[in-house]
Amino acid sequence: GTDGIAAELAANRADLASRADAVITRDPAVRARTAAITDADGRRSQPYAERTVAQRAHLGLPMLPTTTIGSFPQTTELRTARADLRAGRIDEAGYEERIKDEIREVLSFQEKAGIDV
Image 1 (cartoon, rainbow, N blue to C red):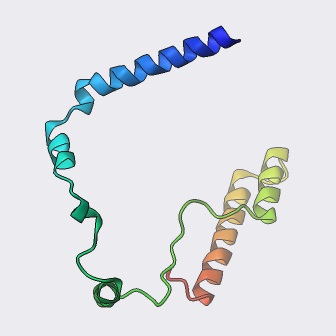
Image 2 (cartoon, rainbow, N blue to C red; image 1 turned 90 degrees about the vertical axis):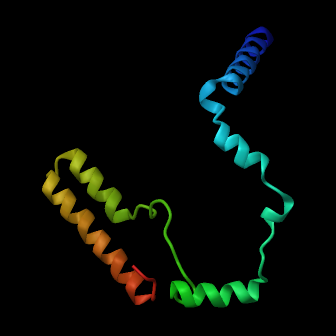
């Protein structure tokens, strides 16, 4: 009820206050760096057109750099392999081989698409 929520909120406020006062969150070097931040730190010294030329020359990236963050969606084949493993239709080695096959297929697709893998 309302009392339970009020108690949870009060506990949360106490936790936040405790953290704010904790020695571990009071690193003087970090606080000094933070205090020294100015509005100019949020602005680039060169316009985009100049930065992009320098970045391309320095990094040697393709026209459209592509990265993968996180996991790829699981394919039907991977879900089936996992179900087969759980049901005892394949063993761990068979499951690992099916995963490796899927990885090879995805890498092949990325290479054909021109994604730097």
